[in-house]
Amino acid sequence: MTSTPPLLPLLFLFISPSLSALTKLNVLSYGAKPDGSADSTKAFLAAWAQACASTTPASIYVPRGSFLLRNVKFQGQCSNRAISIRIDGTLVAPVDYRVIGNADSWVAFQDVDGVSIFGGKFDARGAGLWACKNSGNSCPGGATTLSFSKSKNIFVIGLTSINSQMFHIVINGCQNVKMQGVTVTASGNSPNTDGKDQNEAGVQNVTVKTATFIGTQNGVRIKSWARPSNGFARNIVFQHVTMKNVQNPIVIDQNYCPGNKNCPDQVSGVEVSDVTYQDIHGTSATQVAVNFDCSSKHPCSGIRLEGVTLTYKNDVAAASLVYNAKVVALPESVALLAHSARLEPGLAMSMI
Image 1 (cartoon, rainbow, N blue to C red):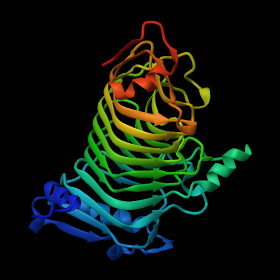
Image 2 (tube, one colour; image 1 turned 90 degrees about the horizontal axis):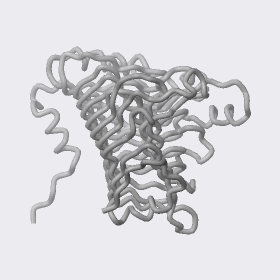
Image 3 (tube, rainbow, N blue to C red; image 1 turned 90 degrees about the vertical axis):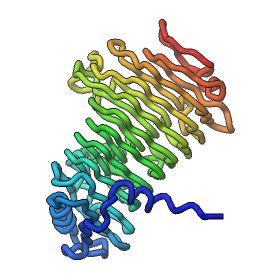
Image 4 (cartoon, rainbow, N blue to C red; image 1 turned 45 degrees about the vertical axis):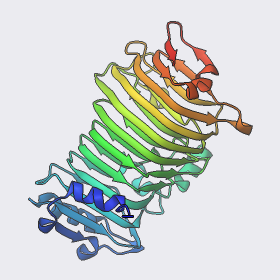
């Protein structure tokens, strides 16, 4: 019997078919140090600059070891549309949370096309900032660990994010994003550490498969600001996701208003449609495991639950909150919606 080739090489060949012309770059060649204490930010940016300027497909390699990074933005537009980043090591944030805590993101990709990330562990060392926030002191807002904005054709495979200061992964204004084998984990006392976010407008064709979320405050979350902006989030699929003691495992929040400033009593202008949750199972740390809080101006449509079986304490079926959403649930997901804490008048929900 012929054995099946491993997944990653197949994907690598698919993304970068012209291996003979591949530009290979090792961050060690640019001065990166795998000791976890020397600042490797400039080295990573230098490797990215060469990869981005290459007119042929390029590969950036991060070997084993710990690499200290400050806030870093990998900026497009690049001269090629096939940059792969293979990470065998761990990226670590500075111990002092204030170094990255006032920026939107720790590691950011913007205006890129055809970027693939294979493997790697991202450790944002968020515990110091969580402690600051829990103490009631004045603290930085916190950085998202990994963000993609205004980008397309993104692949993320086998990545692990731990102890994010704020959100783990955010996708904003992107098209054609695929994530597989992603693991996100944080302590239960971590504030607002969303596992996977689609944020703001213009997000479409996003697929997340075989992901695991452990102890995060929000699992898979689609949110838009409570303000009359234009945009959309559509054709989004979450498949084969395991939740382990996650607060608010499934959330659509079109009334997101950070700090309740500058947006109370406004409604979101972002349309959310055609979102599928398939084979999402495990345990919720909150009684409400599914919260669809959609806009009264632009209700959510085409929301589909297939094999969503989440439990609360002692294997009790979790509950849901549904506002202004059209939901279709297959039989195995009916129990979850049957325990809805509140159904808005006029809610269109069918169970098949």
